[in-house]
Image (tube, rainbow, N blue to C red; front, side):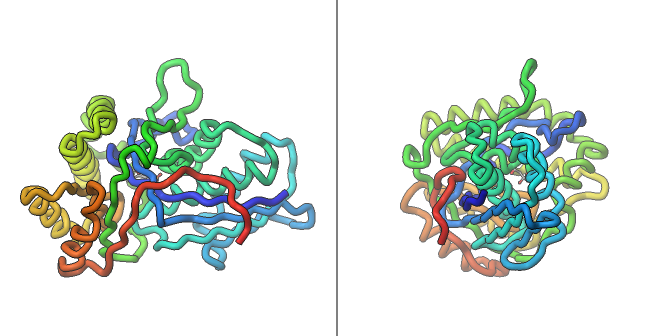
Length: 325
Ligand code: PMV
C-alpha cells in the first residue's frame, strides 16, 4: 500500500487560462506544453489503517495551503478503490514552489501516479491525466513527456485528458529558466482565471482564438518549425497576459527584469539565436531554444540586472513510478 513517483513540471507554449463553469476543473481553452527534465517533484504515498487522518508534507514541512487539494486527490482515488484508509503523503521539489514554475503540475501528476501504484488501481495514463486535471489543470499535461496537448472538452466527451504529441527525443529543445523572484505569487492561477472570466474584456476573444492557436502550434511542432513555434508561443503568452492585465483588478505577474529578459530574448532572436520566451502566472521567464544554445542564452539572461539565477533543462519524460531512494 505504498509507492513513490516522480514527475516534472511542464511549460505551456499555448497557454491555459480560464476554466469552464460546469465544475470538474475543466479548462475553457486547449493548451500545448513541453515537459521538463531536471526539475522534479518526488512523492511518496503510504496508505496506513492506523492513521486517523491524511497527512501531507512538502519539503519536510506541513503545507496546509496544498493539503486540501491533496486530500481531494486521495478521496477521488480511494473512491475508485472503494476503501477509506488514510494516507501519509511526503512530497519534495528540487525547485522553488509557487513562483510560476508550475510546482502544482509536477506535484499532482506525481501524486496520482503514486496513489495509482500504491492502491494497485492500474489506471491508464489518460485516466490519471484526467484525475490530475481535476486537481490542477496543468498537472494533466505532466503525465506525459515531450510535447503534450490538452484539448478542452469536445462535444460528447465526459472528461478532458492530455495526450502526447511528440517525444522529447524527437525534438530535444532546451529551456533556460531565468529566476527573477522566489516569492510566491500574489494572486494564484485559480483565482486569477476566475477574475479574468468575470471581468476581463478580452476573455471572449481569448476563448475564440484558442483552437486556432493550438492548430498553428501543433503543426509547428510536427514540422519542427522553430520560427513558427517561436511566433505562436510568444503570441499565446502575450495574449494570456493581455487578458490578465485587462482583468479587474489588473493582474500584473511581471516584474521589471521579466520585461528586460523578454526584450533581451527578442534581440537575441533578431541576431540569429534560435530562442523565444514564455511567461506564466509569475515573474519567471522561460527561454526555449534549439539544442546547443542554452548555455549562451543562460549567460545572456544571467547578465540582465535583477535576474537572480538561471536554470537549464532539457525536455523529459512523463510521470512514473520509481524505486525508493
Ligand atoms: O494548473 P494551474 O491551475 O496552476 O494553471 C496554470 C496556468 C498557467 O501556468 C499560467 C498556464 C499553463 O497553461 O500552464
